[in-house]
Every structure is written in structure tokens, then in C-alpha cells.
Amino acid sequence: MPVERERLDADVLIVGAGPAGLACALHLSRLIAQHNASGAKPELSAENIYVLEKAREIGAHQLSGAVMDPRGLAELVPDWEKTAPLESPVTDDAAYVLTAANAWKLPITPPPLQNHGNYIVSLNKLVKWLGGLVEKSGVNLFTQFDGASLIYESGGIAGVMTGDKGVDKDGKPKDNYTPGYELRAKVTVLAEGPRGSLAKEMVNRLKLDGLNPQVYGIGIKELWEVPAGRIKPGFVAHTLGWPLDASMYGGGWVYGLPNNRVSTGMVIGLDYRDPRFDPHAAFQKYKTHPFLKRILDGGKLVRYGAKTLPYGGWYSMPRTYVDGGLIIGDSASLLNSQRLKGIHIAIKSGMLAAETVFEALKTGDASSKTLSAFPRKIDESWIKKELWAVRNFHQGFRHGLYAGLFHAGLQFVTGGRGLVDPMRTRPGHEEYQKLSGSVPAPERFKGDGALTFDRLTDVYHSGTRHEEDQPCHLVVADLNVCATKCVTEYGNPCQYFCPAAVYEMVQEKGQPRLKINASNCVHCKTCDIADPYQIITWVPPEGGGGPNYDGM
Image 1: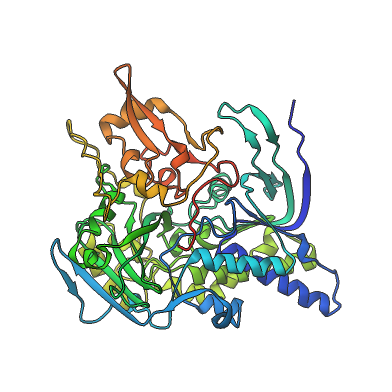
Image 2: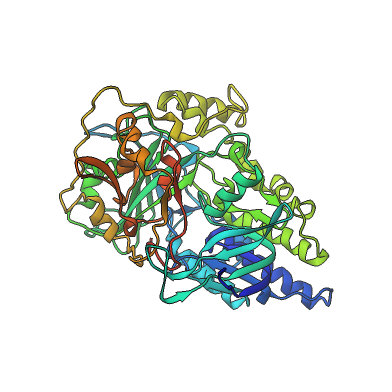
């Protein structure tokens, strides 16, 4: 028998309580308040705005570098400097090129990496604060509810089905079984972050792809407490080079925080060629460089996390509107990959989406004709100006660091055009080179337990928690491919690109078998992106599961 689900109807349903989703909810609630105060009709209500968040609390899944350009926040919350939880203004910045033993400081910090006027923030704390403002505005904010699937209607979308709770690993109801809700809305806004599962489904189903496929990077981050005097609060350093080779796109960072804390990490493009390259191991090696080691040595690891970033830019942006729906923030490719900044753009996109939705509510028309105002608003805003100037940036690095720097220079003086415009690219997983002959598997990185760590130790520091007895949320379409074809062609790269030790090849009766440790998952979605056969699909686990990026 079909499951009976409770139906709830809203004016607006926002999926994802990150910067984009919360900015959309907050700005829309204020527009509604102004509208009602003026006596205009129809009367609207902020209580008819629902925000869904899969994490156990607001901010728990929010991870970023994070140096924030305050431009978007200043437009959303005018008194932000007095009320926002800012770690430190940037007081000094630098850029270094690393070799195995030395750190060469560039005499001039490249303009995209200059951060004076920006702020070091904990995205976790910032989003918690925004969530509080949203709740005070009267918006209904629901945590521990995942968007399991979209409700399609007349060529568009009409809401979301939330996931069932209390289902065992075999898909059978447990004693605490609760069916998901049918949440219907006049407008559904997808603000799920990079590789959003619902946005991915909708883009594929309704053929909303941009000119280029989306490409991604993975960011791996640790938060440390270090001895006093190691680094000044507000100091920001970005690095290029070791331990990455010149064929790869990526680099590292070190940020000085108050109270003797340090944020350090690496971002690496998920379009590298070696299928057995290990981003987590590369980051651990990065910390052994003398430049990093003298800051971290004798300190204590506090938190760990990993997250993907959309690097594709303007030409990878999907169509962001359909009947009854919008896509905003990282889900819509709204990130500046040259500056490695997206918080301010996500906030602004949420505000522009709110203005679009507000007009739809006033007129009673949520068709694509009305919602198509959203990309026009983006075109007329500073978002377009900023992203258009870097529209070919990441594509220029497809053939390595030196070619990328050459293209970046040309693009800088030509307003983003460069030699070719648009510069085309292909999905990162297509860049893998197949193994030639019998290549021995590299030894897994173990760490020393003081400065460097294995994956399981790091996952422990991410605060990750899942209900063990639930269906696996990492759906592999054909496990036989993993045990046969992938073994010989690519050496099972899922064992290496996953920063949380989720995927493991084991021997069973003398044959290889993929073991999935789903409870380790930190929800970075690298597997969904980087699998060479595209047979891994990340779907939301039971609401409330996942990491807890407290203070990151």
C-alpha cells in the first residue's frame, strides 16, 4: 500500500539554510512586512515561508575557508558590523610559492588574493546568527528535514517530498518510523550548496545545463589551537606549489584567528589526471612544510571538515528558473573561483531571488515567465560584473599551472576574455588517465598523530554522526563495475578522493568488493562528482545526520 503522507502547503519553500537560502528568507520576510504595512493587497505572511535544513541544527553543515567579502552582508543586514559574529578583520595578507623546503613570498600579493576590507569568519557561526534573524522574522525554519525528491508538475516543480525517518538498512520501517511530508509551495527555491541533490536531479531532468558542464574543487580544512605568538589574528596567507605538481589546480591557506586559533587547508581542483591522487594525504603533507610546521607544531587539532566548491563559473551556470522554482547560490555556480569567494555572492543571489519571488506572490503568477526575472536581476547586479570578469578563469588551468597563469594574465587585461571566449571545458572525472599495466596501489597515509592524521582521526574531529541502521545514502548503480572494470582501469579512485574513508576495497572469497562506510560521510559529495563512471549518487541520509562544523 502507498504510504500516507501529511501534506503541508506554503507560499515559499527554501531548501537549504546556508547563506543563500537564509538571505532569501530574511529579505523576503522584510519585503512582505513592508508590503503589509503599506496596506497593499494581497496580504502576505512570513509564516508561509518554510526553510528546510538537513543538519541537526542551523550551521552544522556550513564549512568554508572563510574570508568573507562583506558586500552582500552589508546589503542584507545594514548594521552587520555591530551584530554579526566576525572573527577578525583582515589585517595583513601575503602570497607564497612553496617548494619542498622553502616558502618564497611574492613581492606583491596578486589582486585577487588581496583581502584588506574583508573579514575572517566562521561560516558556522555566521549562519547560526542569520538563522536567528530569520526565525525572529516569523519564517518557519525546520531542521533535520532533508529534501528527498522534487514534486514535478506541468513541466516545473511544485514542492518537495521530505525523507522518511525510522527506516532500517533494508528499507523496512522500524518502531519509530515516520513518513516524510509532502511539502507543496507556489515557489520552491533550491539553495543546497555545491552539487545539490535536488538541483542535480532537476537540471538533468529538465535539461537546464549551462554552456559548460560544472567542474568542482574539494576544500579540506582543519581548525587548530596553537601556542601563543605563532600567528597574528587577521593574517591571511595563500600558497601555491608544493605538494601539488604543476599539472594540478589548487593551493593552500593559513588564516590567523583570535584566541591563538589557526584555520588551515587546501583546495584542489577535481580535474586532476592521476586517479590515485589522494587530496587528504596531500593536505596532511602540506602541514609538514616548514612554513606551516612552525605555526602548528605543538598545537592541537580542534575541528576537521571537507566541502566541494563549484569552479565552473559563469559558463557553467544552469538555467536558474522553471515554473515554480529557482536555483540560487553555489547550486547555481555563483562563486568566484579566482578569489575563492562565494559567501557574498550567495547572499546577494538570495536577495535577488527574494525580490523575484515577492513579485510572483503579489501577482499570483509563479510561472517561468515571472521567475525569469531572476537571471535578469543577476545580469543587472554586481554579481554579473564580478563573475563575467573571471568567466574563463578555471578553464584556463586545464593544461596545468603555467598555462593557467598565462591565461589568467591575459584574461586580467582583457576583462575576462583571454585568447578564447567562451573557453570550453569538460567534467573533471573525464580527465582521469587510465592505469597502464599493473600499477601497485600507493600506501595509505597514516599520519604521525600529532601534526598529521589519518582520515578516521580527522572524521572524528568533524563531529560526524549518522543513524547506523538506515538505508545507505551512497547509491552505487552497479557494484560489479567497482570490483572489475574500475580495478584495472582506474585502481578504484573512490578510495583516494573521498576525504572521509567512506569507500574501501576489501577481499571477499578471493575477489575484490567495495565496502561503503556510509556513517563516515561528511557530505562533501566528492564521490558523486569524481567517480569516473558516474555510477555513485549521493542522496540525503536521514535528516539530522552528518558533520557538526561547530566554530568552523
